[in-house]
Structures are given as C-alpha cells and as structure tokens.
Image 1 (cartoon, rainbow, N blue to C red):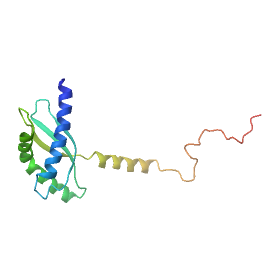
Image 2: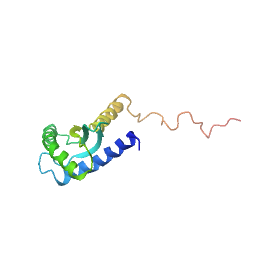
Image 3: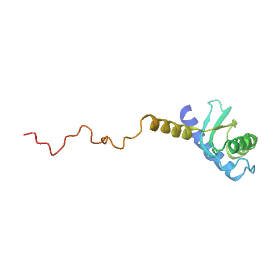
Image 4: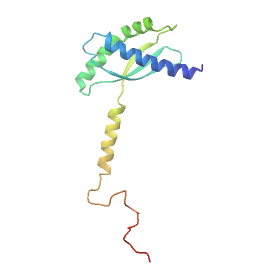
Length: 135
C-alpha cells in the first residue's frame, strides 16, 4: 500500500476514534461536544492535527480549546490503547473555521452583487421572445 493511501486511511481512522473518545471518555465540561471535521497526520507519525468545529461565542470557544488542549495527552493515550501502531502521534487541536469563512465570503458577495429585484431575470437574458415574428 502506498504511503499516501496509508496516511488517508490513518486520517479517517483517527477522525473516527478521536470523535468517539471526545464524546465518550473526555469528562472535561469545557470541551462540550466538538465536531471533528478532519485529521492530518504527518508522514512520520509525529503530529496529528485534529480540526474541530467549536461554538461561535468567543468565550465558549476559548474554554473549549483550553479543554481540548488539556485533554490531548489523554486522547493520545486512549488512541494508543485502541490502535495497534508503533507510534501514536502528538495530538494538536485546531479550530476549523472553513464554514465561518465560507459564510463570510458569501455575505461579502451578496453585498457586492445584490440580486436585482426589478431588473431582468438572469435566466431570461438573451433568450428570444416567442411572440416576436421573424417573418
């Protein structure tokens, strides 16, 4: 199996296992219920970046991140118990802001090019009028 396929498989397996550990085993109330959106393991298995969606409130987000950072060694130990790997990578949690960024970009695009309410419909521009007689 190629190295790339192995890493992809590890990323998905880590994502599943870490999600379960956070839901089942981590008792820190600050962590809450984060959504693990992805994992990227380095090819040497030294580091696993775990991307999570966190609450939008800045205070809750900060608390959740502190809880996740405190839980990282525990999560790593649990992974070591669950998986048969020679090396379990160091866990580093990072916020996944892609959805927030996408919504911000969409809002900016709506401001720059608002939909015209009274103007011609985009679907009908350039289409011939069936009532026009070309004869």
